[in-house]
Image 1 (cartoon, helix red, strand yellow):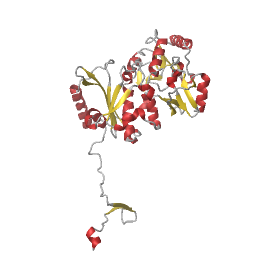
Image 2: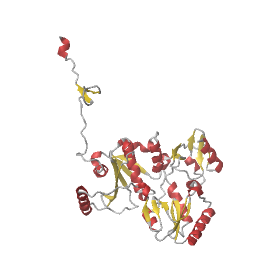
Image 3: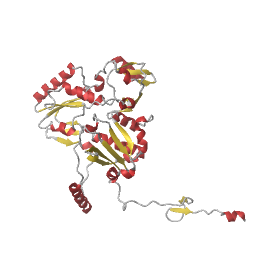
Image 4: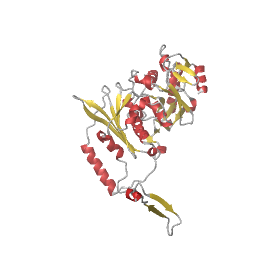
Length: 406
């Protein structure tokens, strides 16, 4: 922390402050083993007017790459810290550490409007060439149909960044490639492919049970409820649930009068082996994170704060929690991109998401019944017993009241 404070002071990102505001400061681990500064701006975010500038849709961004043969990906150095905070508003970003009280002069990580403001800025830099040979999605992608054209395009992009005092991180950039990973997909001359490292090869065994499930799926498609088109002018509602094997979520909005709730989208997936070991609270919190990631293009920068419904009452205190484990700290940083409240919703009313999260549970025929013992029974293993190792159950007897009075 001391090293970060010294560096941030030296480059002019922060300055000592006497502000009455004082957000918590901590670090979360990054994938490359480094540390990422995180400010707990939940209090500030709760009273901040949201800047409604959504991120581009991933499918729309990938469609623009059709016909391209050469690709370059640029990673801006400390991207958010390249934007100056309006003079006079610095005191709002104040944070406290063991080394003093400071405030940011540039956009910090953790503020709800930071991603939207930066996206607006970078779109302004490349406004006349967006969709032609540049994609901006936090990272910048340059694409072209020939190498000569691509080199000219890359020089133009770098020149614009330099003009606006925006600088790239060379070690994170990839230049003049014919194959590249972008937005979680592998981009090639032939098209868009799934990242093979994110999947496990598995041979499909088409059984009678699979055929029955396929037929059931077709029946569901013909009788499923109508999905309404998401309307950015209306508030969203997110219902979430987690079971021991999966998570589920429903994105909904109220339409008409008196405001009937209609689903906009459904989401569910099976828990990984590591996630299945989470306690109940962390599984429920994971369902919120997964839902916000799935519908980030609608919920981040939404015009109205949205509501998250969960049957885990403790999550109502999510925004006020003082002690977070490493998982929760990383997720808390992600949650700062959104404006939402968490509301307890009894499990008896959580039928839709309950069905989505529990569809991955093993059938009752495959589950072994648990041995139930009396509270007074004692279970002992006797390795020296004749024959195979045996388990013996002793049921001790205790004197009755009549026996004691004799």
